[in-house]
Length: 249
Image (cartoon, rainbow, N blue to C red; front, side, top):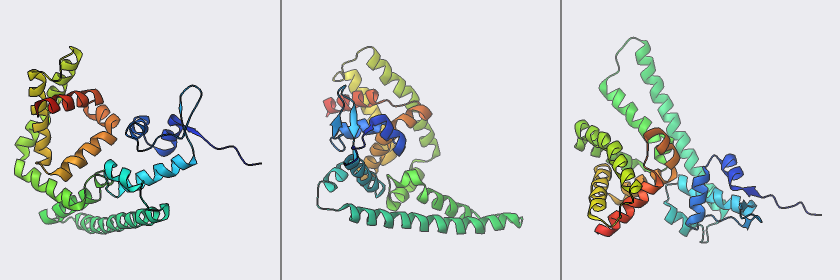
């Protein structure tokens, strides 16, 4: 007699994988990962096939693919074995980068312990290496894009960067107030908010499609943490701005 099929509710799958329930709901909403079953009460139930598909999604995401690209990849002919090999190669690359960083940090630390002062070049190189292997950022930007971000930051200057950072909380509050009073997203007032919002985002990506898409993915997949640590934006605020921006284009 075969064992009964193991099924996971969305909360259980989130807890086991470290993902958020919101992320799994989003994957379902866009058709990337829909549960194979539903309970009598309508709860999402995921089986082993769904778990395998989720692994494929996460492996491809770590390789830097967008959710749209992942959707195309997992409906093709690529086997799970091929994805595992590619994922293993990616992990090996990350480990090698971490080992190089460890060696470099040991050299800088030895200099400090000799009571010598590390040169600016040492410290700048160390910063670059730390940024390059940062696990979270690597999920969304490749090495060339990280370099482009560094150049972008240099071009903007610290004063402009601080001005943008200081504007975000008040702009988010204004958008939240607009939603609360029921402002029409197609109104001129909403269009003005959307124009400023998109302008602030462009300060980051500079019109580069790759940087823009990486930024959107980072926001989309870390919504709860961004809200908790930085006060927003919420999905409702992003939806309002998206509709307002569509209406002005």
